Image (cartoon, rainbow, N blue to C red; front, side):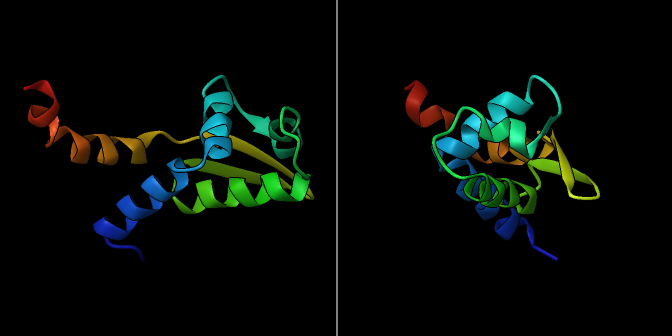
Length: 95
């Protein structure tokens, strides 16, 4: 089980990659299969699947499997912890 610091590290690590951020943007529109998530990218399905697994480990994506088919859904809750952490520095960029 990850502690709070490790969870935050996982979220920021997951968000650090533009492909993963695009996957989250797509999932904000609704659930999708991994194959559907892979369509806009010029990378292999396996590479997209690895990106999805990073998001799953960070808690940002919930995945359900039906045989070989993996359906993905956004779980934005871990982003709240990241936003709270960032918010404590708001006064630095507001001044």
